[in-house]
Amino acid sequence: MVDPVATPATDRGKATRQALLDAAESLFGTVGYDNASVSEITRTAGVAQGTFYVYFADKRQAFSEVVAQVNRTLRRVATEGAAGAPNRIAAEAGGFRAYFDYVDDHPEVYRIIRDAEFSAPEAALAHYEAWAGPYAHVLAGAQAAGEIVDGIDPDLLAHLLMGVGEFFGQRLDRWDDTIGRDEAIRQVLLFVERGLAA
Image: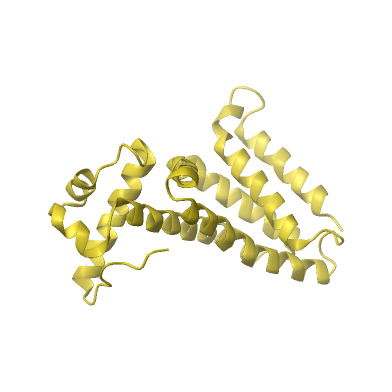
């Protein structure tokens, strides 16, 4: 990821930079990378257009940082959902449920992640690597403790579970007219539980 043009030294500068990132996230998530302009980002953030270039070299750098911001939020949500669980399978259920609740309320995160694959592929790769590395480490520990199935590479297992979460999360609203959202989530969690059972 490209370093910021300037790292804010003051609270005001940090707040301005964060306002720009939040405005960019909102616009990238609603109109997409190609249709979001720097002028619209700065207007939404309530700052002069030139201020953008104090903190970011260009729109692409700001977008890459938005992808990283989305990644941190999603991982925090899942981690908080898993906290306090008595074992890894219960932690997975809590993490998945919190993740699904968040993306159900913020479906725009998927537009950002999908756009990244084409507009900033290095940011998309960093998004998945930042998620998979720590996840694989936790899963390896659960395997060693006998809490989940052994014999599957933990990095592969992390990517498989990420795929379940991301693909189902993108289509969460589509189950309302068939089996219903809550029942669909229950069945996904049942699939994860049975797949992970030692």
